[in-house]
Length: 276
Image 1: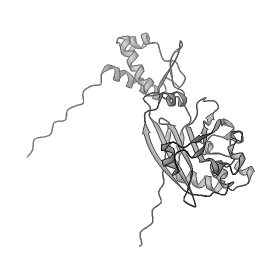
Image 2: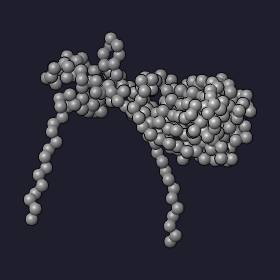
Image 3: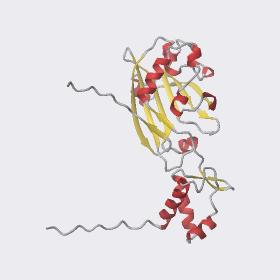
C-alpha cells in the first residue's frame, strides 16, 4: 500500500500582494464604492502596519489591474463602473442584415451600440472620422487587394455620454471605388448612418454573404490604454472582422479594439441533430 501523499500548502503571498488582494476584496464588497477616494498612503500603512512603500506598490498593482485610478493632486480613487459590452456575433450579424433593408424610420430607432450594451440611443455620441488611404501590406492581405489600392478609412469612437471614453476603437475599411458609387458614403457627416455598414453597402448593390471573425488578446498600447481608460495591465480584445459579398469579394474589413475588463464574446453554435 502506497504511503499517503503529502500536500504542501502554497507559500503565503508577499505583503504587497496580500494588501492588494485585500483592497480588491474590499472594493468588491462595496466597502469602497466606484468614485470613492482611497484612504491616504499613510492611513493605509497604519491600517496594515507596513511601510508606506509597500502600500505604494500594492496600490500600483491595482492601478495596473484597472481597479484604481490616480487623479493628479487629488489622490487615488476607485475606478467608476463602465458599460459592459456583450458581443454576440451570430445574433448581431443576422440582426444587422435583417435591419439593412428596413424603412428609414425603423433603421433610425436602434444601432449596434445599443445592441451590444442594452443602453438607449439617447445615451450615445457617435464621433466618426473619414479619410482616403492606400492599402498597406497588412490591409491588402486582409482585403485581398493589391498594395496601394485606395480605401475609405472610417474611424469610429462611439461613446456613452456620461463615461467620456469610447466603448471600443473601430477602424473600418471599404474599397474607395465601391464607396464612391454613393457619394453620401464618403461623408462622415452622415454618421450615425441608419442601418450601419450593411445598409451602406446595400445602397451600392452589395449583399453580405458571410463574415469571418478573428479574435485575439494582447496588452494595450499606451494610446489604447488612455483612450479606453484601462489599466496598463488590463488586456484588450482585438477583433479582425472581414465581410464578404455574395460574389465572394471582401467589401469591408474592420479592426475593433475592446477593453478586456468589460467585454464578453458570446457564441451560440447550432449543430445538426443525429438521425434517430
